[in-house]
Length: 132
Image (cartoon, rainbow, N blue to C red; front, side, top):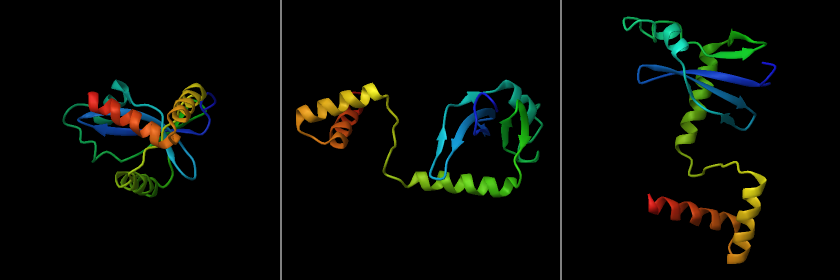
């Protein structure tokens, strides 16, 4: 895909609807960019209510050169992504991407309070979660 190089898209069925989940995969992680409900893909994969998603071939697609192309060795890809997902369930860590501006603010406030950036950020999140 010219506009989004190296991007692939999961086609996911959830609660009787189909969603597109664009992602970028590196050697160490899969970065899910967003989730998009798709009427077009719902019609394509689920059709009418009589159509069974599982009976239709389980396929994941990548979008390259403005065309949808089926991924080779689908069962291997499914197993790899399921392994990634399962490993995430047991992690006690969250990776967050922040803007440079936000990072500088957090670093300055952490220094002012005499705390590490990690401890300070944890306290910000904990404090926010206590309020909701």
